[in-house]
Image (cartoon, rainbow, N blue to C red; front, side):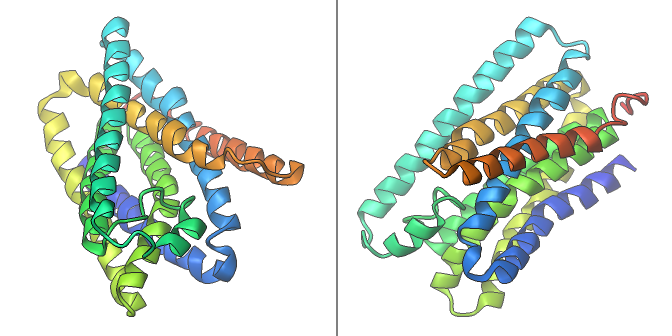
Amino acid sequence: MTLVAIILATLAAGIGSVWVAALLMGLGGSRAPGVMPQRLLSLAAGALLATAFMHLLPEAFESHGEAHDLFITLLIGLVFFFLLSKAELWHHGHEHSHSHVHEHEHEHEHHEHAHGHAHGKGGWAVLTGDSVHCFGDGVLIASAFMADIRLGMIAALSVLAHEVPHHMGDIVVLRQASTNRRVALIKVSMAGAVTTLGGVAGYFLVGRLHDLLPYFLTVASSSFIYVALADLIPQLQKRLSARETAAQVFWLLLGILLVTVMSGAAHTHPHMH
């Protein structure tokens, strides 16, 4: 039952986020590169922070894990994702220095909020990076499901929320590389499907290493916290009008509220370990 839930949730988070991104781009038209992703970024940031601090970390600390060890794991996780991000930026910067500098400047100006690393990346580089990232998301979702079914659903929804603006940028890049929009959508969907492979691998990995589950949950938390604070929120820190700032705060709080409401039953029923 848990494995089936993991498969369905990772499919929804992986492929579903791609199709939601494409739908929003189609509905938003010219607004899609601007207003809509800003709202999605705020919503995703709130959802990720709420999931990490209100659910994944409490679940880890309520287990048999030592608080000191879990805090060390959280710190190591944050540093790891920082180093991973630096390595990725170095690689993309090196790759970009050997390509045409102005090739994607116009696209980058309008879509940097949707995908911070879209600039200077080729189509296959996008797909490769996304596949690895989605595999990791699948493992994190599986870790949450192994602790509690409802917690896994919350984690999957949080991943879906933060992957939507990410995939909007991917689709833009791939559409520039190919005139066929359907092919671009299929390619990004295939990368998103790797989330399910990560989920299945995570199910068997976490199942065999059940004693390490609190640490898996803590690493998942560090991933969510890092994405929210280092990737999403900095893209929202712009000088805006009072109305636009209020809208950002509203969507951020809405993300927190949605996760809180959806998980209301998670701590009122016995955990499904």
